Each structure stands twice: as structure tokens, then as C-alpha cells.
Length: 284
Image (cartoon, rainbow, N blue to C red; front, side):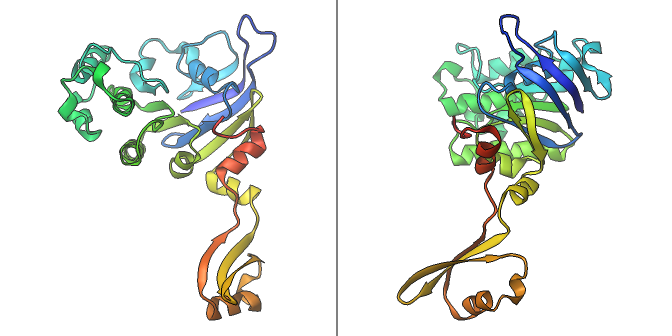
């Protein structure tokens, strides 16, 4: 869907490039995570891909064509969910969706979208009276309003309780199952782990590494298993190499003779990888 080659960009008042040669592609039908600390260039990249920023160097192609060759029709193809919801606070939820629906040639019935995110009963309430979570859900609905092929989502579940976050994540999965493609930016590594087919970690305006969450955890983790079990009126923890585990007599004896409390592999977490590749915490 998108292919970036040596993408570079410098803001007019800056002395250095914000983007320093990005190379990556987002395949049709995948959820692609673009991750990194604040200020690393994620928002700049998104603004270029949504044609809000021009004057970049390098190449950006959308569906095999130079992005600059597209006119306003490009916006019929994409949906954008900003991190900070922007609505007309004096209008109702329904009036907000009806207003934005008029900007597109095709759009989904607003009532159906409102029902999916649990806002149907509040459709005639001014958005200024909505909670933050309700505004986040309405923001997500607006991104889907024009039946896009490609979604740009920035922190789509931020500020939502677990139940409403689950609704949004299920809708993201449904969108993908119907052939949609998504570029996701978030600091919630649990969302990345659950939703993304591949992730790219950005550092200092460049891509530090790209792979699937599973492959990244295997690459940066340890091939070992940790077993916590009852022993001598207490608990003991032992760590064993995964290689040759089936022939490890000590491990087999523990599994067969002891009461196991916990057992898990020693693969690393995406948050640990985030810190390793970018040098900062995912929550900063």
C-alpha cells in the first residue's frame, strides 16, 4: 500500500533533519506498527503519508504511484484517527458524523457506527458533555466513516477502560479481516503485541529494526524456560535452556514430581525491546 525509500525531511527552522532516510513498506491487509519515543519522527512520517506535509526528499509511493500524483481523491481512500480527539463540541455526536460524512462521496451509516461503539443512546447529546473515553470512541468512528482502505491510527485505545478498548481492538481486527490496512502508532505495547503483524522501531529519525512482534521477542530474548515450584515448605525457581529440554532429567523430574506454581519462557517483552532499540521507555 505504501512504500518509502530514503525518506528525509527537515522543518524550515531546524538545523537538522527530523527524518534521516526511512525505508519501509506497508503491505496490503496488514497492521503495521510505527513505534518510537516522542519526537523521533512518527508524527512527521504520518503527516507526509497523509499529504499534510510536502517538501520531503526521497520517494513515497501509494499503491504503486508517487504520492504527489494523487489529488483530493486520495482522501477518499484513507481514514485518520488523531491521538487528541477533535470534534465540534456544541454539536451532537450524530451531527458531528453527519457533517464529516458530507465531505466524502461514500460513507457508512452513522447509526451503525454509533451502535458498534456503544454511543447510540448518546447520539443526540452535545459532544462537549462526553467523557474523554466517549470522545475517543467517536474519534475512531469518524476515521471509519468514509469506508477507507487505509487507516492511520494514533493511540486508538488511549484513555479507554478495558471493555471499550476491547471494542476498538475488535473493530480494528474486523477492518483488517475485510481487507483494510492500518498504520498504528501507540505507546501501549500490549496493543502492539495483539494487533500488529509487523512493527518498525524508530530512533533518531531512522528505522532501527523491523519484524513481527514474535520474531523480535525471539531475537532479543533468551531461549530458556523458568519454572517456579514448591520445595522444602517454600518455593524454588530454576531456569533451563530450551534446547535439549526434552532430555533434561532435572527439568523432567521437577515437572513429574513437584507442584508447579508458574512456568514460562524467558522471551523478552516488546517494552524491553523498545527501550533497547530507542533508549527510552515506551511510556515517556
